[in-house]
Length: 370
Ligand SMILES: *[C@@H]1O[C@H](CO)[C@@H](O)[C@H](O)[C@H]1NC(C)=O
Ligand SMILES: *[C@@H]1O[C@H](CO)[C@@H](O)[C@H](O)[C@H]1NC(C)=O
Ligand SMILES: *[C@@H]1O[C@H](CO)[C@@H](O)[C@H](O)[C@H]1NC(C)=O
Image (cartoon, rainbow, N blue to C red; front, side, top):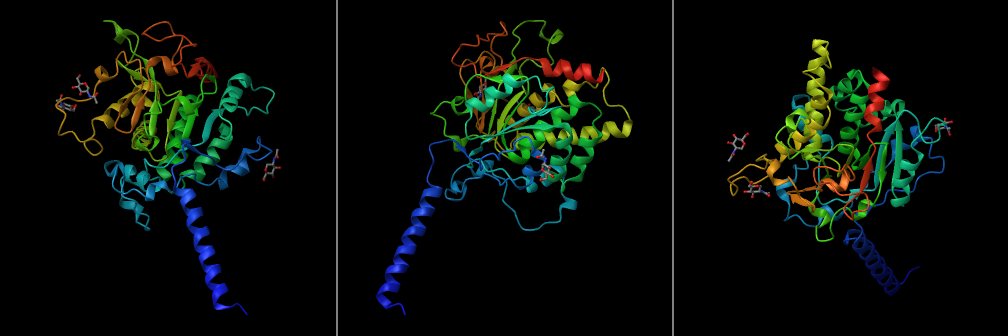
């Protein structure tokens, strides 16, 4: 039988161990990414594995209640009747946003084939992401697997699934997929024809605390010319071939809501794409850009009292360094569009050049459906 003294010593030991472990879990890890479990060996078999991937939220969020409240949706995890909620609220309930979690260490890509398939032609591009991001889970999701993955992630929001399944072209599904996967899981989405030039760990200056941002975007076009309307749909266009986000970010929630509602409207009409109803405006960079600007000017998330002007393209035109607005970091045009030799973009060897996008995917998608 254990003596009273020994019992006290055991108790003290367990309590100390408990607090030490707990402390090490909640302390601020200098690394801005949390690591999900290592990739299983048969990495080409992604159909079974995705289902039990745990969320990679750190526990840091619960410790500091005082800051960033404005960005949080109340964490109502009690069972609620979702049938009366708006789509936007359902998505917020399903995938709540917490700015203080870490950026999940996922890289999501989508293509017709997995890298294991002989017809996969983006091996160099795909490998560049793996090489620069050791410890990340890197998935190339095929169209067939994407259907199942979406079914899993959005089972509770059937209108999203209905919209996803109704989209008639691969380019539309691929556009929608990036917003859906980032809303549900977070991490990095990048088009398959895009090279990583620098690790995502280096995208944001060290001076920006990672628990103050939840979305990192780049500029696709900043056409400073009087006839810009002949060439671009927006005076500043944010790109959507590479995006980094924390799960549940309100911009993603909003764009998924918009695309879902617009898809169901077009489905009813029986007409998806026309000259007036372009891919650009429906799922592409135009709606992405509008959604981001609407977020910047949304009084639910930003205190508008002190500002007497809206956030517009003027706040981002010509920027040469990352600019933080609220919990969003906008990278200069050089970061995601280097080497385009216009609009102030610098070359691939510039220290601010982070990815190289080849513009093959969009052409290919058009060829595929045309
Ligand atoms: C993938 O996993 C499923 C279910 O775990 C299994 O039935 C199938 O044989 C696997 N395929 C490959 C290529 O390993
Ligand atoms: C900001 O934008 C809103 C909506 O577009 C508009 O109603 C408002 O007048 C604008 N405010 C300023 C100061 O420009
Ligand atoms: C945006 O630009 C306007 C002037 O165009 C300025 O008054 C405002 O402070 C800027 N806001 C931010 C967040 O940079």
